[in-house]
Structure formats: structure tokens, C-alpha cells
Length: 225
Image (cartoon, rainbow, N blue to C red; front, top):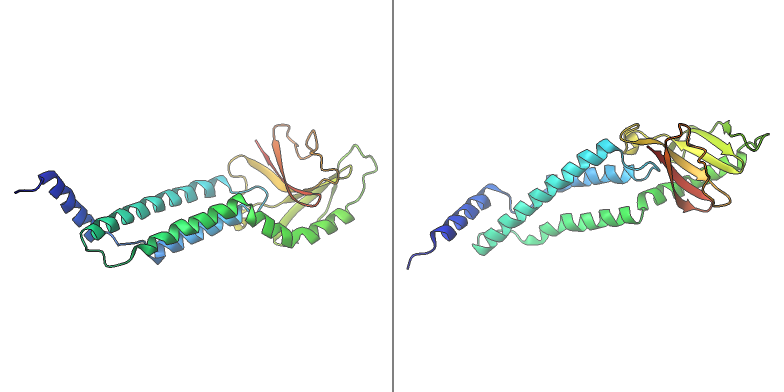
């Protein structure tokens, strides 16, 4: 009794796919994912976060990787059904497990917290040495070290008891300066815990400033259009 021609054609195409694709993604595949993931985590370790260019290109890499992984898995399932698979399927777990760790680190803000914890003593010294303003209603700019911990600094501003330190964002930090709608970012020492209104860092009048607590009286801030 003859078989279904359509089913036989699908099995034949599946066999051709099995012969042209690797059974599971190899180390170059996982190396690319690791490098792009590391750049992404580096970007989230600065207050401004990931820049638009890195966000776009890494998103394309992750999407392409998901497609390759899915096709390879399909190929392995077909080969397994035809008793042609020569490798175990545990290698397919590497990318999902790595992805779970990556997403957990992002959700828990681990990169920023870890990098900040190393730099906080230096920022505390900046807050202690900040000059007071003769007129409390006028902001006072003052100089800061070129770097604190692994953060490169630009300048600092004191408004009454609040202190705002501007952090340089560049490709070295995993973000692209000036990319997208990010304008400035840094860390703010807010002893009262109250978000300033209007925002002292709002120099152009069009920015939206976002704050998130990083420890003690310190907050990470970023200004966006």
C-alpha cells in the first residue's frame, strides 16, 4: 500500500534540511551571543542605559540567533525521528539557560548595582567635599575627578543640599553617546529622598528626568527627550 506523496515529500525535504544544517549551534554561535550579551550588560551598568545603536543591532543579533536556534532544533527533531541524530540534545539548553541568566541580571539591575557598589565610596567623598552655595536658590557647579571607580565623570552641580554628578556615556561603556533620545545621565545625592521639581538637570526645558534608587541617599538619573 503506497504512502502519502505529500508526507513523503515533507520527509524528504526534512532529510535535505538535516543534511545541510548542524545538529546543534556550536561554540561560534554561543560566543557571538556571549559578546553581544556582555555589551548589553555593560550598557545597563551606566545610568543612561543601552544606547539606540547597540539596542538596535543587538536586537537584530538576538532575533537572528533565535531563528538559527529554532531551525537547528527542528533539524535535530527531524533527524531524531528518522534515527539519524548523532548528538544528544542537551546542547540546545545552553542558549536558553544563558538567556534566562541574562534576563534575570537585567530584571534585578545587577550590572548597575555591581558597578555602583565599587564606585560609591568615591561618590560619597564627592558629596562630602561639595562646596555650599552662597545663594541657596542658585546652582553651583564644581569640579570632580576624571574618574570614580570605573565611571568617567564630566562635572557636578549642587542645588541646595542636592548634588548631581554627570557621568560620561560612550562606546567604551557599552552605550553610544548622543544616540537616540538620551541627553545626560549620572548619579544624584538627594538627602531628603525627594525628587527635585523642577529638575535642576533640565537645562533645555524639554527633558524628562528619571530617577532610580541605587543605595543610601544616592539615585541614578537620566534625562531624555
